[in-house]
Amino acid sequence: MIEVLRAGLCDLVMDLGRPGRRMLGVPAGGAADPAALAAANRLVGNDAAAAGLEIALSGPRLQFPQGGVAALTGARFAARRSSGAPVAWNETLVLAAGEVLTLDRPETGCRCWLALRGGLAVPSVMGSRSTFLPSGFGGHCGRALQAGDVLRCDVPANEMKLLRASPPADEAEGCLRVVAGPQVGQFDDVGLAAFFGTPYRVDAASDRRGLRLAGTPVSHRRAELPSQGVLPGSVQVPPDGQPIILGWDGPVTGGYPVIAGVITADLPRLAQLKPGDAVRFVTIEVEAARERAAGQWMFKELA
Picture 1 (spheres, rainbow, N blue to C red):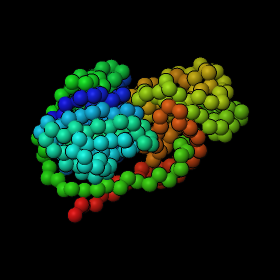
Picture 2: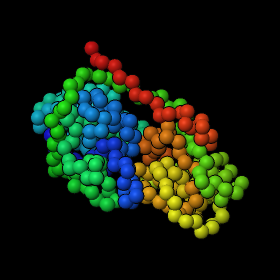
Picture 3: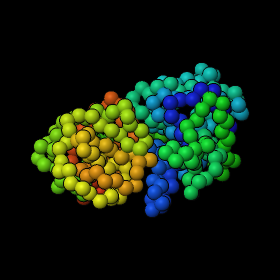
Picture 4: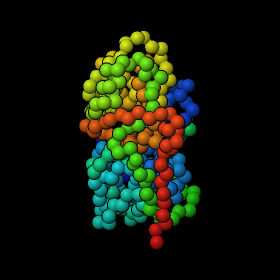
């Protein structure tokens, strides 16, 4: 079990999401980087889809009254253990009874994932234990964790080994690779030059529903468009010309023109963008994007 002594800015119970509900207006949601959560789960001997914690921007202070086995993946946060033992990322951590784990702010990036052996035992809603904040369901009481919350873990179902993981290499060097969107023809040369030729900054008014960008306005024809299906990574341009990258809890339909879509291989980078970060877009052909599948995590048994 875990006791929350201090809540972080946004600590959410997440698993791999609830696909297949978009016709009901419910996005798949789930961990912003599902491969990172799955890797953390493997490090503690869980099924890849077990529920863990997604921690963003400022972390919590957690006590483990009976001890436990944990793993952290994703962005490295300034962290400490009450035992004085180091807090390693991407490997199995054994926590003593009564030990406290404190996560402060990320050294780089935005989000990390914490898996506990057995997985967090919260009710499943529509086939998932993920928190969906816009509607207040799933996860722990449909909300971010608060001080005083107590979370329990399921009984472990699998054997485990002490492992160390290596995340896939980041080959795009800070840019987001995109394919052309369905309404790219709505944008003139000036608008396209602004979108691909100038940097943007992630605005403070960003969350899991979408990342608002600030920079050179992207001009386009303001024709009325029917509502259309959209996915995480879709880049919409509203009338003010400031792009919005739709996130994991974003709407399933939208009426703004979609200029581009972030490729699947770069969605983990999208998960690590925080307010103030610079964003540049680089175009890539659809076939080339398909060839660039998401990188694979590698695992090595600890001696």
